[in-house]
Amino acid sequence: MSIRHGILALLSQGPRYGYQLRAEFEASTGATWPLNIGQVYSTLARLERDGLVAKADADAEGRFVYRITPDGEEEVRRWFATPIAPADRPRDELAIKLAMAVTTPGVDVRAVVQTQRTATLRALRDLTRLKADAPPLPADAADASWRLVLESMIFQAEAEVRWLDHCEAFMTRLALERRPAAAQTGPEAEAARPDERPEVRR
Amino acid sequence: MNVLVMREVSRDHGTGPNVVHALRGVSLHVAPGEFVAVMGPSGSGKSTLLTLAGGLDTPTAGQVLVEGTDLGSLGTAARAALRRRSIGYVFQDYNLIPTLTAAENVMLPRELDGVRTRRARREALDALAEVGIGELADRFPEEMSGGQQQRVAIARALVGERRLVLADEPTGALDSRSGEEIMRLLRARCDAGAACLMVTHESRHAAWADRVVFLRDGVIVDSTGAPTGPESLLEDVR
Ligand SMILES: Nc1ncnc2c1ncn2[C@@H]1O[C@H](COP(=O)(O)OP(=O)(O)O)[C@@H](O)[C@H]1O
Ligand SMILES: [Mg+2]
Image (cartoon, rainbow over all chains, first blue to last red; front, side, top):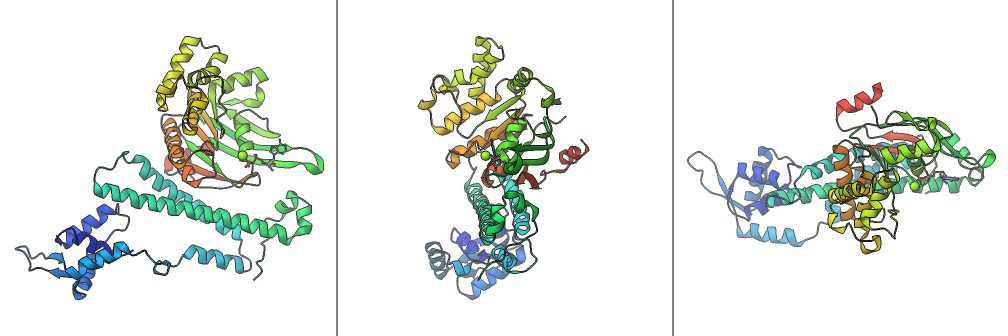
């Protein structure tokens, strides 16, 4: 998540105090990614160092107003215009875990899949409750952007469950093809050996 | 009292070497106001579970109770009457009668139950209004979109205050927007006190339920549990 670009985008709408940036960032994302004020100020310090943001003199209460520089404006334009490269996203720990489960002896892949599917469905249910409780139309721009963030998380959870379904189906098919003799004896033989784990050919 | 109780329910198809254990010793409770989703791979026994819960099929072993009545203790006629009174069924392909209007489709089970035409029509119009298509009451199924037809099917399942709603892939043929509207309707009915058991393969739709149970090879292998404490604790006591 780019806090840096989020803050720059907010400053492109006009000068703001640090605490304002934090509140607006959280309102736009429905507090999905809570920021502490320390993160805001350390990010602002780096943006200032890079010439993308300028700090005005302190006001009567000792608070600083930050404004975006022309270089900062250019950076925001570039950010919106550039797609996020796959390499810039964090590695998918779940995919790594499944890959390891398949190759590590003694790990029940179906159990790993099911445990994750249940947990992801719980998360999906909680996200769906947030959506169900919200009024049909967003009240303002911050509410609208929060809805989009919420939908993004719903789509991600849904995609994860679909991928897990696919993994399970794939492993089941693989297991059947590996055991032509067992396949002939029907579903009973399959059920009698719940612990048997198919091996993957490399 | 739970609206639906299934105790150690099994259903075998065929005999001898060809026997298929579609369901094996499944126990499940659905309380008033509760929305439960059933997920699982194709052939895992989801539809079997629903037809048994709805009294459309008889278990090989175990008990099915609807509002406290053991379906196995009833004769055919009594079971059909209880089904019409207490259970609403929603199918993937809607199952509307093409030669009847929306209102007539919704009225039909009530008239079969001896309710007078006037009152049945009144109820049907209310049910159609509740699912948001009051103005389509006199249309025939072929004059409606898939989402609208499914709303009629839901109105038919809900009319007459039926307390148990069973839905087998009710959003199967719908686009995602209509699918979500159907979920909102079922959710609202549960929030108003009905119990709902729904089969779906879409996690996006299962997420509208309070609880998701996973079937595999005729056995419940996992469950998300209910979102908040008290109700789910009560269930274990029963
Ligand atoms: N009438 C029947 N005769 C024989 N086998 C059946 C019958 N109905 C269902 N089955 C079998 O029972 C199992 C469960 O079926 P079903 O409940 O339809 O699964 P699902 O709805 O999860 O796809 C499957 O193996 C299916 O082939
Ligand atoms: Mg089915």
